[in-house]
Length: 215
Image 1 (cartoon, rainbow, N blue to C red):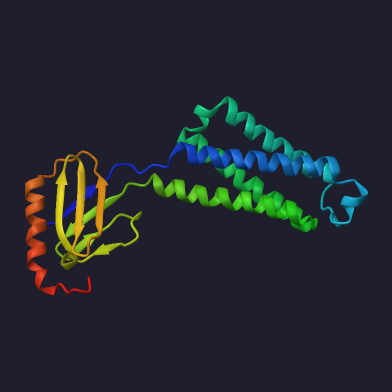
Image 2 (image 1 turned 120 degrees about the vertical axis):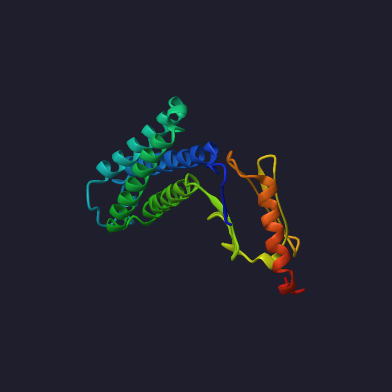
């Protein structure tokens, strides 16, 4: 018999998403303002060698996007916390940040390119992270071993590593022989806790002779 237990959503905290939007807004606003106001100054032209597009245009776009994001963040924060809306804004920030970074690189404005590139890549990483956090997570208990959820550092546990498995009060706990402890909150399910724990104890007992002090 095998048991596959779904875990509760491990969703990303809204404060983390909001903070990155805030950094993106301020970063693009500052970069855009500097480019828009100072790109035509003689001392700046020494580092802004080959503008691909007029400096006021790229600076204006960067500035307006940053201001729009900050305005959205401060006036529509609840709307922005909705996963679908957050995803749309995140994708817009990825596209804008990387596109601006490319234009700045081709214009040889290295500092602005670095700032926009970091912003674009940070939002790209956040997008992948948020997608992963919204996936359904499972922990599977089989005769061959225990398959841990995608968010765990390890993917598999051998039964000889396990000392005890408990399913109580909506929490599944795996207590390992080497004092490691894995614990997750589970979604409501109709798993018979007594039968589940008995199955786990049977597997632990069957593999106990394979244990070594190196675990």
